[in-house]
Image 1 (cartoon, one colour):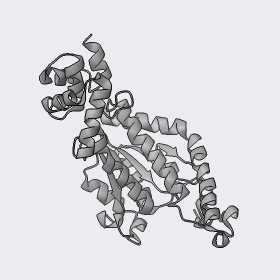
Image 2 (image 1 turned 30 degrees about the horizontal axis):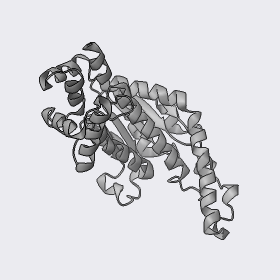
Image 3 (image 1 turned 135 degrees about the horizontal axis):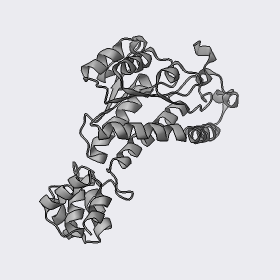
Image 4 (image 1 turned 90 degrees about the vertical axis):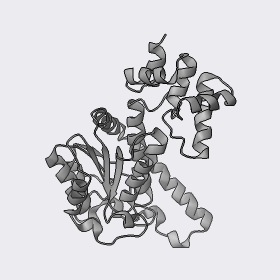
Length: 299
């Protein structure tokens, strides 16, 4: 695929005089173009939902969610993966982001790393990819060799694969089992896919990880009840969640959290089901970690 033919590489007529605009005119233009992102994603919602179901099934089979990408796309995958442990209480292995060029590429562009079609296979082999895992290839252009190689290897291994790109008929779309393609149109700054395309990718990744976590019991109502109390802010958030769900005062919430070994779900069950910590953890286990079912099954 010739890069000149890509929608994401076309010139945007609305920004043809970008260098002559006032600062206010600049940001108004940016904002107007960003409106196109959510509309493009709306067209992909059925495919995003299908991808969430695939990831959910993988989690239920002890599989992992693996993001692969280069440049901005790779960084977005690493970002989304790194937020999952504190937010949902999962291990650092369950959701992983792999970027072409390795950790150094997170902070400084590793020119040429994305062009190695065999590099992703080496990276995926290093984390011992299994057929139970789901691999999500992220590339705004949809033609990045690193991502093509990674998805191809994952398919051969028997993994479910998902592609996220912002161009129709992208090579990675034909490789993956599910192709999510929010076509956001030409960028305000020609070819700068860190803008609308990057925003679209970030929004899709938010949906994939959060949706799968909801479907596997990591959320009660709209509360992150598996949050880790790893800093002062998250300790206070945990107390607030216990207070919101149970109606107790903060002092009682603090005591429950201590008694529950900093586990919010168990603290809530201890208060509402009137049980001790060991019984609360067993009730959760009996209900596959779903707090709502654990609360209902005791009545």
